[in-house]
Image (cartoon, rainbow, N blue to C red; front, side, top):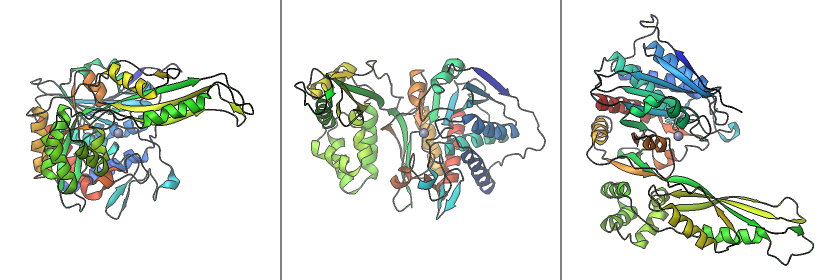
Length: 469
Ligand SMILES: [Zn+2]
């Protein structure tokens, strides 16, 4: 289907009478608003596919309009809107974008203890599809714009809110379409997005650290393809069965290990983690930090065992995920295919990467197909810069004592496209979560601790005010 392009402007009615002025600072009121908006956003089922983000964007547009903030919707595909709203600054610095996606992964009602599309509080947690990923950030960002407006904060730069569509499936209605049709968004200097990590201790007594995501690995699918004459299974062929050859190659690729390499962002992450991590993991991190240029294998192995997500960013990884071969029990297939999902370090040499895969496949009759364009996912600057200073100041107010340092994420976010557009994007995690809480994203019973809700909204507000003041 040919996508339709049109923009719908929702004009603000200045001084629109009934709209209650958002609170200046009163936490009870702010907490109520955060819960109310999040409830409304979660009630709109934006499972992708099909997405249906327009309905959620309209909820956000109404909350903005009630505070006198104009927004517009861009619908690259009918029903799949992105929302853009802009608070004007004095032009003293280039704009900052705050980005959150409105679509979610699907949910199956029968796998959940409560309705995924009803924000439900139970035993100190808030449950709902998208509460973490990423409607919590969407709600907090809308409320931050309302509060910047009602507090009459003088902004040195424009604050631009983008609530995006089609992040989870990365299809035709995604952020690249938005950037193509709204090139003015590329003028932004900085962006905040999902992808960070604010880790709550297991006993939920304190925030251990606040990570800004400054780089991410690049997802690349590799297809392995074997072919043969096929035939009747009652007569085993002289030529090898493509399915058997392919299975052997997949087994070899499955056990392939790429070299460990600490990128500059990962080095800073490991150094930061050493200071706040005890026990066996802390010891392994210490040994890794002491020798970042030749990481000790036993330290890497210990980290892989104790914290697989941290080990994942120490190297490029490849995992076989799909087999496609055979149609009938009595037919030898003429073709067999397998998909290997690889996550490349952002500066991976694509030629060397392919050569290593071909070597592991070790069968010249198996085709190895992949997109050979370089990963092109530049890291955002790390160190003493505007974003880290702002995040440190905001974290000090919301989670005193928690150090702020960068991370590279295992997976991919829309920050890849922003970075390619020249915008320095950083992922935040507005909600303090234990690793167990964090694992519920994309899973049944997605949750956040109730106590993390309001501090999360406050962090987004404080961060934007720091960046724009
Ligand atoms: Zn997400």
